[in-house]
Structures are given as structure tokens and as C-alpha cells.
Length: 166
Image (cartoon, rainbow, N blue to C red):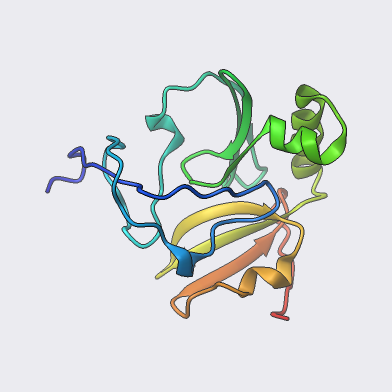
């Protein structure tokens, strides 16, 4: 299949993942519900590039080293994501955790990331980035890490963060 050929992604189970956690990799869903997301780069770690989704990007922030691009999108609700990767969170989730309005919660979360207050995880397999997400529990990120995956911890500025598995 050519690299730009469309394919279908099926998801037959629902998962609730809040802004402080992620789907455990050993609990991968069955593939079922049809959606055309362009090419899939890895079946083990599905990456859905945000550019494939019809969203209204209202903010773009690029890290000083150019490695990360954080976006804020607004449609029905607001969402924050690292452009090109599957992790994202929604403003209503952030608001429910903070007693702030949705807009204020989004602003606060973005500011925490770009002011280097948040630790960011970069997941790689065979040197290829699979996903990027913020974490409040860096050592807990090792819990579901498969042997072939490496985790890097950093700040928005590019400063490496040393983390040991608990």
C-alpha cells in the first residue's frame, strides 16, 4: 500500500482517559469503527496526525529546540495536543479538575507547559517518536512500558529530566 493511501481504523470499545493518565498499552482496543485517517505509521502505537482532523487551531507554540509543537484547538470545546501525536486533553476535563472555567483551565495548562513547569514524556520505538504527553507521575510512566519502548523525559525548553522507574 502506498504511504499516503487511505486506510480504515476501527475502534469497537470506548475508553475514558483523563488529562492525567493514558490508555495502558497492554489494553489495546479491538479495531472496529470505520474512520479514514490517512496512513497509519504504526499499528502498535497508532498516531493520528492532528492535521488530518478538521479542527480550528487557535494557538500554536513551538518549543525553543523546535522538537515540540503544542496546539490549542477550538470547535465545540477546546482541546490541547502535541501536533501529530495522539495524546490530547479537553478543556472541560481540565476545568473539572481545577474549579476554573474551561478557557482559564486551558490557558493555565498551556502556560504550565511552556513555562517549563510540566514534565513531558517522549515515547520512542526503534528511535521513532510514537507519542508525546505531559505527566504528573514520571516514574509511574514505566508501569505499562513494553520492553521495545524507550521513554525520554524533558521540559518544554528541551532540558532533560532524569527519572528512575519506581
